[in-house]
Image 1 (cartoon, one colour):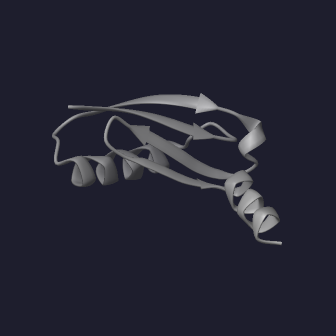
Image 2 (cartoon, one colour):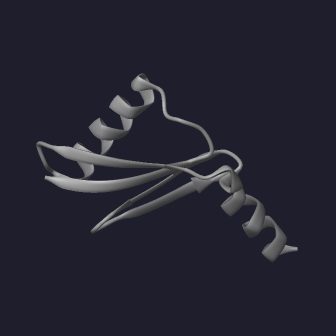
Image 3 (cartoon, one colour):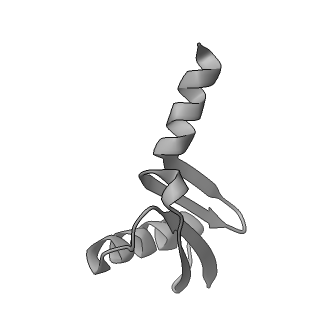
Length: 71
């Protein structure tokens, strides 16, 4: 079993929730995933997924920060 926190700017659709769960199951090699969903409009768009072993930050806020740091 894996616990995952999913942060997004909007409430997740059922389809997206199922896709996220399937990807976490495959990445963590587990049968069950418990999602803790957090709505944070400051991420602007995209998703941030945190598990005990992995973290994926594909938010628009992170991308804008990377661009600002590169300039």
